[in-house]
Image (cartoon, rainbow, N blue to C red; front, top):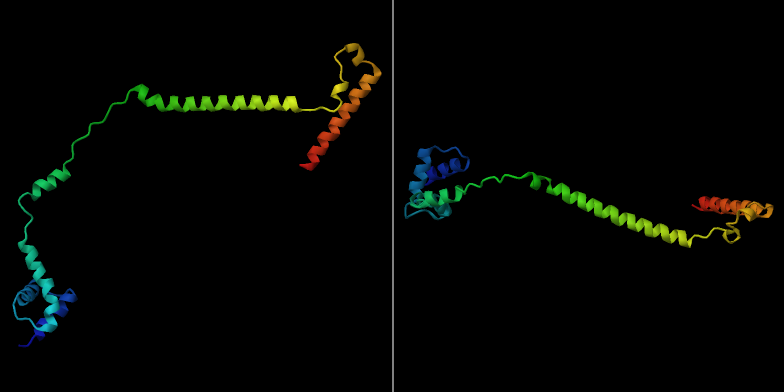
Length: 159
């Protein structure tokens, strides 16, 4: 038997140029029992289409599909004013906490720096006004101020 026509139809099938009638001829050919060996590899393709046409979706297909599609309706909750403003209260509480901790840390650092600071000539200062206005005391204060200025200027140069 000459299978030239079937081979031509297969070539058209792979190029997507066959009509529905030509595809039906191919299906009928491959549903036969005696198929040449070189065309046997295409049999499963055309018989698969027939087998799948016979297999139905089942009687409960619609019910299963609708059960998956139809989800229960979720009603929206109405939010009260308190529920809407609660995140703002939480944020304000966190900010207040952070500012409190920051101010405590700043006060402790400032206290440590005031205790640990040494001013040159501090031991020469006095609280008695009579002694403070004596010429030697004023000279000592001017010397201390000059030393502090020189030290402060030296710190700026190093930085």
